[in-house]
Amino acid sequence: MTDVSAGTLAEMLDERRHLLEIALWMFGSETTADRIVQETYRRWYALDDGERAAIAVPRAWLTRVAGGICLELLAAGHALGSLPAPGTPAASAPWPVTGPPRRQTPSAGAMLARHDRVARRFAAACDTGDAAALRAVLAADAIVVSDGGGKLRAPVHPTHGAQAVARFVTALLAGQPPGTEVAVESVNGRTGLVLRQTGRAVAVVGVSVAGPEVTAVWIVLNPDKLHSWHRL
Image (cartoon, rainbow, N blue to C red; front, side, top):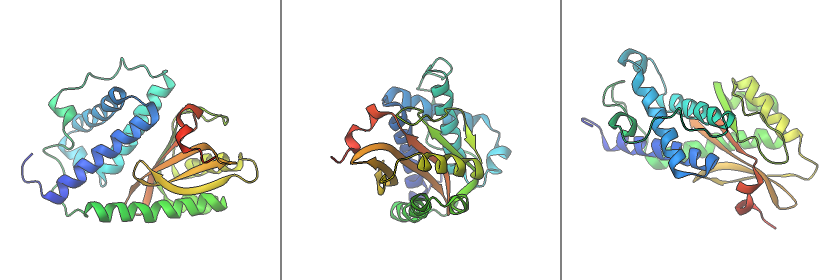
């Protein structure tokens, strides 16, 4: 890449790592995670320069696309035949060479601090079950992605929009028995939530953030993926 500041490069690498961590968390396979991220960037490259320039928050767009791909794979039983094999330069690059003009970016520490503030607003709304507060912290085109496993039945079809996502999360929380703990903890190196019943994790929730809003909610319910989160 040319004419890329150190701050911009740090954000690019942080962004790609974030997408990889989400995909790995959802599927537990490095190969699958890498192909999901590469397909996400392939779809970015499939846009023309004008379409990319019109995207106000590229990170949010990439997060939503990665979430959609995860949903596609979950619905198809993790079939990977539709995803391209890794290795093409366009798919591997963390950001397009051309596109929106360079902009000032925050440091990695500032990005984590911003994520923490927004995630804690989301957590507070979850803890009180306040649907209005949830909608207020969600981006208008937010998405929720769930692996659909565990004791609670959750749809694997896409759930888009602040109101729909707020309903989904509120229903998830309302479906828990009395005494369920909602704890704010580090999830994939960023602030997230863990739901526990008598010390056993029943759900782990991560969020993607752009600006002051949550753009995606990632929920793992599969008991096989939650053992390390138990606090017995």
